[in-house]
Amino acid sequence: MTDGGGGISDFPGQYRNISCKLKKRFLRNPNVKEASEQFGSLAKHLQAEGQPHYSGYCCLAVARCEKKLGNHSGETASLIKAARLFLEAEKRNYSLRCPSFDEHLQAAVSCYNSAIKLHVDCGQNGPAAALCLELGDSLMELDRPADASEQFAAALLGIRDYDGALGVFNEMASLISQHGGGSCGAYRDMQRHCEVTRVLLLLVLQPTPLRLSPNLAQVLEKYAWTGEEGDDSGNNQTGEHSLPFYEVVLQALLSVFYVSKTLSLGNSRERDFFVEVDFLSQDLFLLLQSLVMACQAHDVDSLSTLEADLWPHMQWPEQKDLLRVLVSRMTQ
Image (cartoon, rainbow, N blue to C red; front, side, top):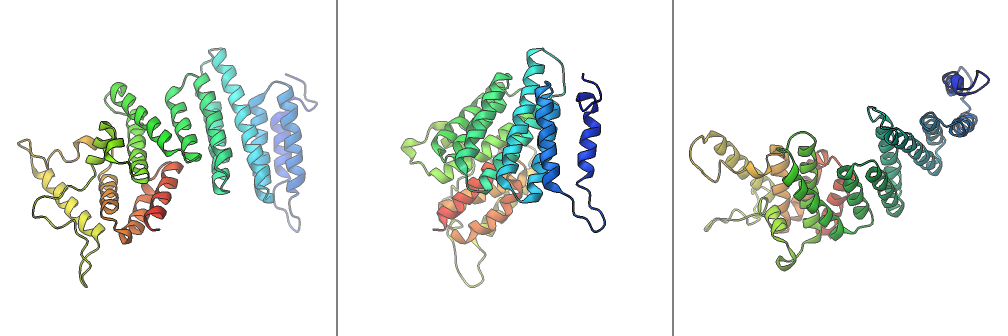
């Protein structure tokens, strides 16, 4: 620790003084550019004194200032620098076997995700994928292979390598099913992530039956339309008073679901309708099944409605991107 002449011990005071310059005052606009420069100078000073986590907080403050100035490239660069500094602090704790609440790692992942989102919003998928790979490599060094695999899969999606991404998510799903510990907690969330992303990837790729592995075929079978003999409900009627295909399917599936809830005996197919995907909510399962059926029937009119209904259920940026790609390809 250095003494109060602007060293580490006076960091809270210096940070507070610079932050006060950003407050709005009567007839005076805050000097955001000056504050950004001072936060940057303080970050360099703290990094030189071996305090990467404090330096990371200053870089986050620089990113906020650059955002106010409308400098997206400066904001992204500051977020990346902050993420690397937080990772440096986390790796130091890991090497010393120092117990912690992973606060530095969580801050680093948050900064990386914010920078990745900025790149994606600007259409810069290459740099976004590079950041995913960088974060994945760091997570591997911290002995977090499950989290790292998600970042590697996101990198493949970022460069539009859908075949490679499908292979990674398929391997992740296989590992979860083997070592998932009953599919509870975090394993359940990862299982849901893999399932939804695999369905979207399969719909985007539309592989032929010869190229479809048995486990991927089973994924689609859970959602695909298998009409019974004499059942023409899969046909998309376009009469004056007919409902869209999407609404007809949802009504039929809801009827099956409520009937299955009333069955308490026997091994009926209806009662086990949702057993294979018990990690999905009822709404999400029905919407995914409707999406698969709409793609099978080439019902373009229903896809826009389905996209709006599915959007709140897409918890990961790559899932939203895949949904956009699927709808745009189907509606071309």
